[in-house]
Amino acid sequence: MTMVETKAAPVTRDAVEELLFLEADLLDRRQWDEWLSLYTPDAVFWVPSWRNEDQTVENPELELNLIYINGRGGLEDRVFRFDSGDSYASLPLPATSHVVGSVRLLRQTDEQVEAGAKWIVATMSHRRGTQIRSGWYDYVLRRTEHGLRIARKKVTLLETAIDGTIDVYNL
Image (tube, helix red, strand yellow):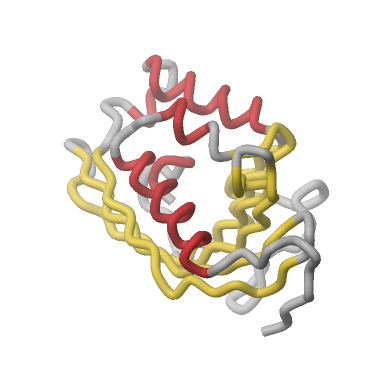
C-alpha cells in the first residue's frame, strides 16, 4: 500500500467505507437520485470484459467492455431506462442486496483517494430467481465541497459466463 502525504486532512478508511456502504444501500433501496449524487459530473463507471482467464481488458475506449459509461449523464440515462420501464431486460426490476467489504485505501493526494473493495450482490428476480455475483471494486474518489464523490468506479466481475442481465444496480 502506497500512501502519499497530503496537505489536506487525510481521508480515513472509515470515511471511505461510509461512502461505499451508502452507495450500496442507495442501490438496494432504489434511491436513484441520491445514488447519482454520489458521482462527479465526469464520473466513469466501467465493467471490463475478460481478455482471457487471467486478464481483463485495459482500455475502455478501444476494447470491448461489459459496461462503459463515461460521465454522470450516461448513468442518468441508464437509471431513466430501467426506472421508466424502457429497459425490457430489467422488467420487472429485481431486488438486490449488496455486501461490500475488505475496503482498502491505496493512495491519496490533496485531490483524490484511490480505494479498493470486494463485493457480493444477491439479485432476486421473478424471471431468474436468485443470482449471486461477486468481484472487486476499484474506486477513484474525489474531494469536493460536498465531501468525497465517486470519480471512477471499475467493477471487476468474477464470472465466467453471464447468465442474465447485468446493469449498474446489480453490480
